[in-house]
Amino acid sequence: MAGFNITVAGDSAINLEFGNVISEKTNGLIRAAAQTLEADPINGVIELVPTFCSLMVVYNPCAVGYDELTSQVRGKLRGLVATTGGIHRVVKIPVCYGGDSGPDLGDVAEHAGMSAEEVIAIHSGHDYLIDMLGFLPGFAYLGGLDERLHTPRLATPRTRIEPGAVGIGGAQTGIYPLASPGGWRIIGRTPVRPYDPDRESPILYAAGDYLRFVPITPQEFSLIETQVESGTYECEIVKGRATTPVQAGTAGERSEGCEASERSSADDAIAVPQTESDNGQTAGSAAWSEGCEASERNASEHAAVPQVNAVPQANQEEEDEDALWV
Image 1: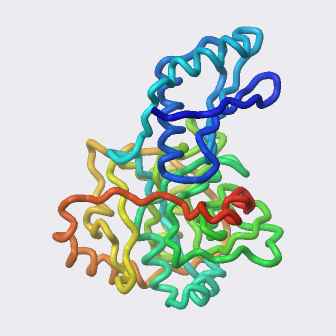
Image 2: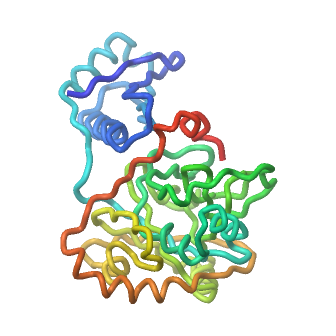
């Protein structure tokens, strides 16, 4: 049975606090609580907002009072069990790494003591759990960045980062959905639009989903960008088990295998139209083709797909405290 504390968040919201450390277990409890309250809604509850360690319940105080709300919440969440493992919704994000698209890739590689190709292989080598959305519409805080890629933020943040930029900040990685200032190290860029106010579902993904970065070439970036601008591109979303990070010494290798990573099933795929337009030239990765070959050679070793270790390195107190800074 999972315990939680209830705190007041103004006159029309409460927080259900499940802990003070970012972890896969805490995230699983938050998702389970949200799913339970969505499946068996409380009259007067307007919105559920998952965060790193808590679930905010926004309500109409004219429809339900604080005492009644908290009593119902405790009753519905009695015996709550964390949602972990199993099949997840995985959103595949094409990324062109390096060059003008990723001006800080070299710095990240130097800090990690490895080549740019190894950084790309590791960064794209497994799926990332979306712990929460925040900062900007569609900005996903991702858990599970390989420790080898942890890199300090820029000493002086940039005043503008282009939409679609993929960056690393401390122990986290993510995508800037809109142009904004920011201090994360930019290692690549995606031509798709995580946030589109004109789309039926404006944000491409949700907390509890996983993101999978798929390296693409500059030519593929340009092609997808053109399709996005014309409204013909469909971002692939699949149902699958999250992958585990590649291990040291396996640069270019994908943990699930190239074939498993790239396959799309008519039964699983969910097509989401995209519209995106950005200027800027991009540079890609030479690691992808060699990674496919390495993955195919090792695919037979992955008959049972392992579960992702999607726990951010957040028991480091300093990283917890500035997790929201970008």
